[in-house]
Length: 278
Image (cartoon, rainbow, N blue to C red; front, side):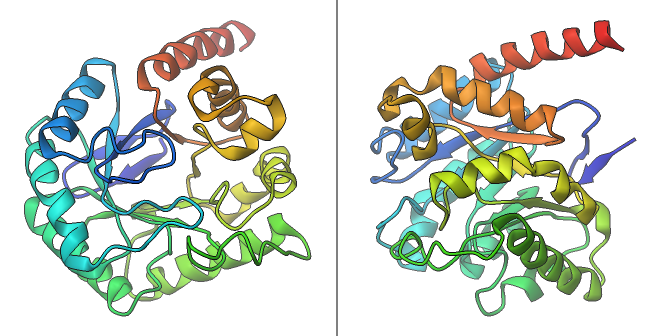
């Protein structure tokens, strides 16, 4: 059985898991700050639970291209009350952050997963999560910073480069004593990559399975889907579901999405088809 060990939960990855996005930010590309207020973010957590979400992912920093990086104190103020409530809901809770101050506070609240778009590269981040006995970790690939990441989107071979980066970051964790079953990796769709790079990562996603870690993939509402379909952000539901299903078909174990209910339903149909074909 494939699983992901986290602070409070041993998550069964035999079934694809749906990670629901809660952006407690004023400047998210996808929801325009709808959940920047604490009450709205908490209500969204509750809604996602009723929609069948498997994991809640709560973040206080927008990582859209060109986004401003908040101060650690500002980011913590956005997410702390939401995390405090989320951990009471009986679901695994992930904090989407690169900031060690936020990670520490989240772990003290009992958060299950640290999901870092910068793959624990900020000073002290890797040491902090490595010192925790069980917290789950997601390492994501991003070239540069959100404000500049699309400027330097150049690769010799994007799949190989992403694979080598994630292998190195994961090895640094295991060398610090972190168990393999605590680690997942994310190729970082849309983070310092062109539409062509993102499509190549989907087409060749199975090559990343050679890393030996479960894949977490986030295609939801991304700009590449707009390039492929010509649709605006608000009209990318069908494309997002198609991308999530394609990612799962190519070996992803967790999909990170905005539209939880629709994705859960789509995966139920996909699972039934898989059972028939088996």
